[in-house]
Image (cartoon, rainbow, N blue to C red; front, side, top):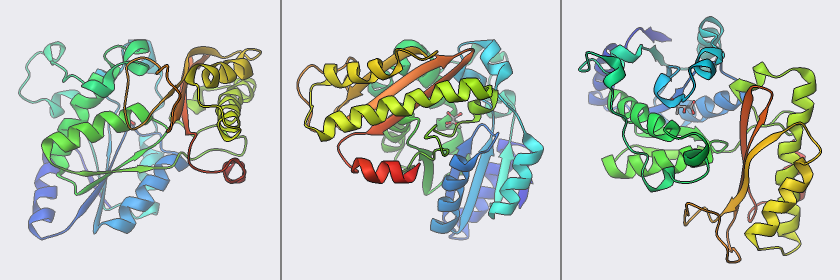
Length: 295
Ligand code: PAF
């Protein structure tokens, strides 16, 4: 596996690969890799001639410097993992290397996340999705991938980056299923910051999503009622809920729709101690038994 020290070096290498006619599958990450990332990398490796991964904890997408500083970093073990997974090239970089044209890095102007940036994460983490959009734009231009792989867990992020990809004309965005541990907790690098007790409390998030799924299966279509079903499950836990809402995934709305839904994506963000977790579940597709079998 090739380990390149800068976006510049990565861009030159990727250009060479593309001119040799090779397709590049790309997985952008902030490191601290877990099985969720590995599922994306496996897919990128199997569907493309080249599998490229970036590791960069992007300060532009953290509104709070404490959260940025606390974000887990494990570069050495990440590199070993990537090598074992058959990744072709990994690159890292600093903010200055990603934005060489900007002298004072405080002056970086973020791109707007667009219509999908409104509501939910856009409300509770103002600027976060703009920061994601800004770095993902740079990453796409650095790598020039044919396919890029994101996890469904960050559902609103997948909408924002798909919109960006449609605007610049590449790459094809592949959204992969959320990977969960045995308790149903969605894998996230932030889980490493949870105590065993907090991990147990955090299971309430998936339980709430499953309750919404069950209500949907029984015929409930009112977003408000599906949302209060989720809140009910989480009310006796230590979770501080930012939001528990349901949206039509094909027609993003800034606030929760009022009319009954035909398609539905349930989305939750909640704090446990200092750690903020997000999770999501499509309500109108897979039967509940199948979901439970996954966990
Ligand atoms: O999902 C993430 O890990 C990050 O938001 C991403 C896409 C790597 C951009 O920094």
